[in-house]
Image (tube, rainbow, N blue to C red; front, side):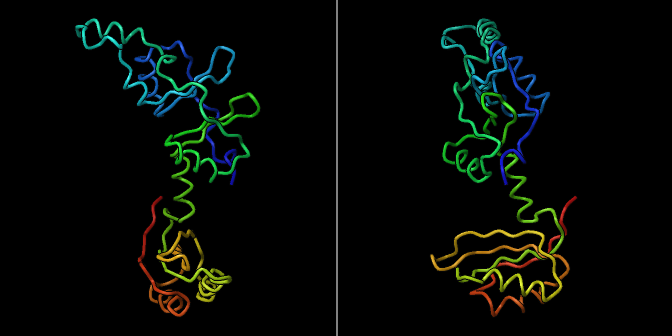
Length: 218
């Protein structure tokens, strides 16, 4: 899966000379938490977040009256509080690479570029939605998590057991297990009963960590 498949586009942007207070009002109206900042030629020059806007204040604020602070706040523009030269990705960047950049750099979104043209933005919300889809979080079915040896053919054995029961896999994810020799696998399976899955999986895994029925959401 690539960024270009899941990015938000067309992307909402803002100009650098917009007052911070106006930017905050617009952000609430648009229901977003960040804007790429572009100049009048449409070139990306920064990114500004809701936190940047909320933290904007005059450097002399401690010595001013409430009215003076309000006046100066009205003069502060997006350019003063934005992050300049933001990290970016391209449409053919993998989703996991974009997620790694966001996690490592502790940022919530990345502008997406096609050459020198801004074409979209990928955010933490997009990644959360992908995570939900991968695990079948909105689908009804049996959710089962197992600890299994990390050996060739193990997933084949487990999916074969599901096939043998007539089940349909709605989601699948795995992480490192309790030891370097095992993985924790989570399946969301439709069309089977929990006891049938438990019986089929038991001889194939080290242990069943959790099993439950979920109704799913629309």
